[in-house]
Amino acid sequence: MSHDQAVEIEGLRHYFNVRGSLVHAIDRIDMTIEAGQFVCLAGPSGCGKTTLLRLLAGFMRPSEGTITVGGERVRRPSAERGVVFQQPMLYPWLNVRKNVELGPKLRGVGAKERRAEAERYLTMVGLSDFGDRRPYELSGGMQQRCQIARVLTNDPDIVLMDEPFGALDALTRERLQNELLDIWRATGKTILFITHSVDEAVFLGSRVLVMSPRPGRVVLDEPALFSEPGEQIAAERIRAMPEYNRLRERVRQAIQETPTAAAATG
Image (cartoon, rainbow, N blue to C red; front, side, top):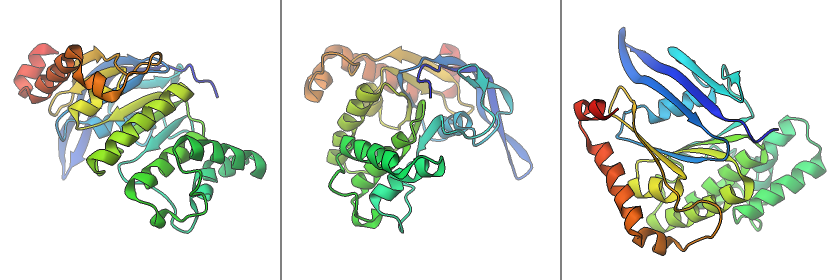
């Protein structure tokens, strides 16, 4: 697969029919996600973050507007767009290695090749010694690592992550944040990462977006260059930088704005 495919979103609106009434989930969104960006999307609960991710994944069709990847319109799910869900979606009757191999197996990849790819990504996420374990024998953090390895083994152009660390304890979450940055630097994947955490968004992203309360609109779009490829700086040094904390405060303020104020800044 090509890994230089940009995402283009034009005139995107989405409505849900709830018991006969239309709920306006997403208002007009126009934006481009360049190939190789690590985009973090933050916003208040119910603002449409997960809806946007599901539209990008092809799980739903937008009510209005278009989403294209590499110039081709998104109409259905595709192996080009891998999804990491909030809760690990693993098959308990398969061991860790076979869970990770599943995507290539379904695509007809030979046993030797898919075993090698699985081992590569299990090593990358720190699970090389756990290939023979069942998912229920792993901690929550290890299960999420397994899910990430399974998505990466399918070699998608774009990785869509829906609050994958939200249910983890603080230390595990911080460790997986650092591991995810290492994976991004090593693979060059385009990542869209949804989070409720302001700190997580600013620390991980090469770009940070904030959505307004429903109907969701992008009200802040800022570069965040603290974790870009290149010279790697310790996490504690990054979080101590004045510019890091200034951006964190701008993101926090954008999330806390009322719908009226947010619309005025859009």
